[in-house]
Amino acid sequence: MVFGCLRVMQVESEYLPLYKNHGIRLTTWSPLAFGVLTGKYNSGVPPDSIFALENYKNLSSQSLVDDVLKKVRKLQRIADELDVPMFQLAIAWCAANCHTLPG
Image 1 (cartoon, rainbow, N blue to C red):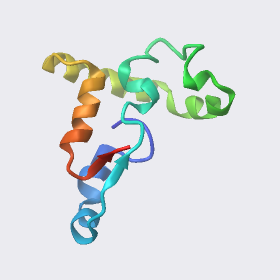
Image 2: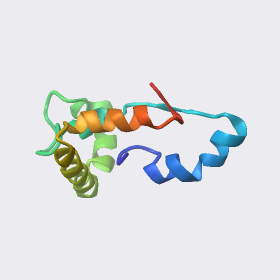
Image 3: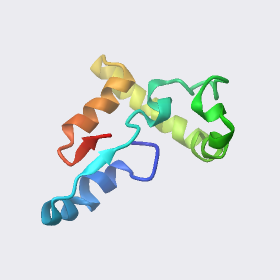
Image 4: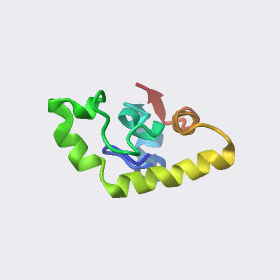
């Protein structure tokens, strides 16, 4: 989606030959992006969240930047138009993509 190593375009088009030619599927690890796709971080990093832990602070400083939150807000508009919570939109995308496996 908007977080992590793989982007939607890679999953849906660039890796298509791997799926077709080699039968490879992806395991979707953290489909809610550690809570980012739930709106949990829209107002910053909550003290009781995973990104508040010392081992994850570096990840949060790289990933929870304005650019990511802008993308999440765009996804929120799509979820609002569909009248579903954002987390449900993220899970539905994973479930609908025949090349992913839940992780």
